[in-house]
Image (cartoon, rainbow, N blue to C red):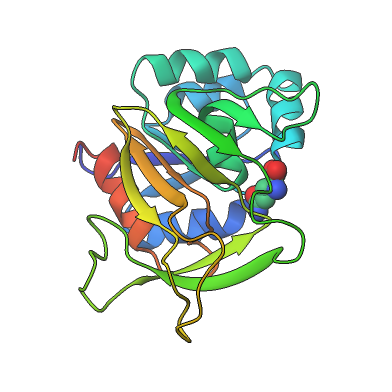
Length: 211
Ligand SMILES: NC(=O)CC[C@H](N)C(=O)O
């Protein structure tokens, strides 16, 4: 594949930042709102936003069944934050009627970091991008983020919340899984697209291109 075409699900959430990040790592990036657009892409990003809203809009825009089918056929998908919730097979603390698209054998806890820490930035080691001790961690932003509470056997854990913060203070959520991969599916609890660090998008575009 020469230049992969990667769609960004554009029903709700921070679409533009993903389009910019994808283009900066060499993909052709476009918005996806219609079934024909979803059929045409080589890979898809589900952005952060509000997972209950994206869930409802997926059904209204008649994209949900098609997305599930394309995921079963092996479409590479990267879900960030709300996108991670939508990729999870199981969800904790969702609303009563909330559904996910599924595909990843994980249990995700929605709004897991709690109200008092709605939003924070941190540096993370991420397997294959900024391995532990490389000294070049990924700058990440967590915004009312979920975490992965359980991951199945076929899920590769890519990042966990570190034991201490940058000031050396212990972190309550230490050890929680915040990035994972299962075959062509990639999920991060954080938003890499708003800190200007494009390496997660680079990893995903490499997956789309056959890596
Ligand atoms: N930044 C985000 O995507 C937040 C996700 C949001 N808390 C949800 O449940 O969907």
